[in-house]
Length: 195
Image 1 (cartoon, rainbow, N blue to C red):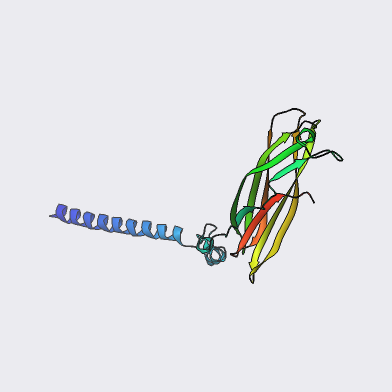
Image 2: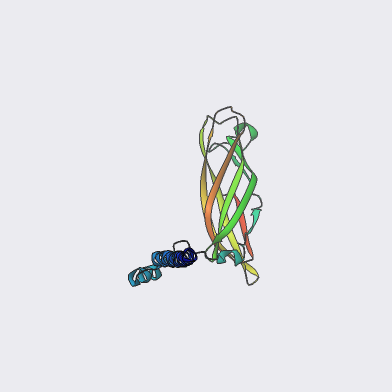
């Protein structure tokens, strides 16, 4: 009987010891998760650096891109020496605009247009070789009250090196960030401008 009492007492005390150890361990664990007041204040003052935000630009209307149109009668440029008759035998060179393209993207409340114009140049019998500066005019017009208003105009000098007696050469230029109002009713006109 003494053996039974001793065994019951031992089990009872062992159970209490295990229970107290478990409670102590859990309390020790809680203490490691607890923070001081200073730590709590500093963590609330500095929000996490990886906050997710919604990009509102996806809800904006796309950039409007004006139509491209060559100015009638200005896509071919022929040059002759000064004082010479304008005949095929006296031709210095002939340049032609053959290709054009544009893209637009939003730039704040405006549109930013990227414009490319390309073509060929052919030397004539009187060309001695060298660099040619092709005068390319780009203008943007806006429809206003039944008429047109020019809102952008720029003359570009496009350099092309052309050897004497060489075959035709290609040329191209790209103008980026032509800023325009993001409004309908605009047209881009272009061509050679000898003025």
